[in-house]
Amino acid sequence: MFIFEKRTQIPVNIRNRNPRLAGIILSQYGGPDGELGASLRYLSQRFTMPDNMGKALLTDIGTEELAHLEIVGSIVAQLTDGEGAKSFDRYGTGAYYVDHANAVYPASAAGVPFTAAYLQSKADPIADLTEDLAAEQKARATYDNILRLSDDPDVNEVIKFLRQREVIHFQRFGELLDHYQEKICRT
Image (tube, rainbow, N blue to C red):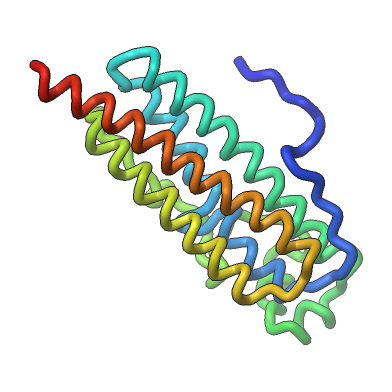
């Protein structure tokens, strides 16, 4: 069971509306390297970790990724709040508006809907943690790409925070992988 605190890890206060930027950032909501996939991957893999150390880390990071999903969704919602069809069309995101209006829908920046095919879970701690390390680096790289495309300081502050959390998650997964590899070498 989880306890939900009704605030995000970092405040999201976007002053300028920009459906184009929202469409780019949406990839971290439901795209191939986004927060939805990360949270589901880690919360699924935790069940087959060989000890409580692994289960706890995957639960903690999976839960934090759910919080990141809320943060990214808040950014997208604030970037499109009050924007109408003509605004979306002007920014080249009219097709998104036709299907979803201002809703936050799990899809990539290219418009591909979220799919469970983005996830992997093998019940092998070495394979799963190696997958998780790669997932964190792909998420970091996506945040780097967003920062290259965004000129909104309100958005960039939040994206930099999320990027840094991906780096921390990578480090924690690396520590856990080392732990399991040492255990294997001793047996």
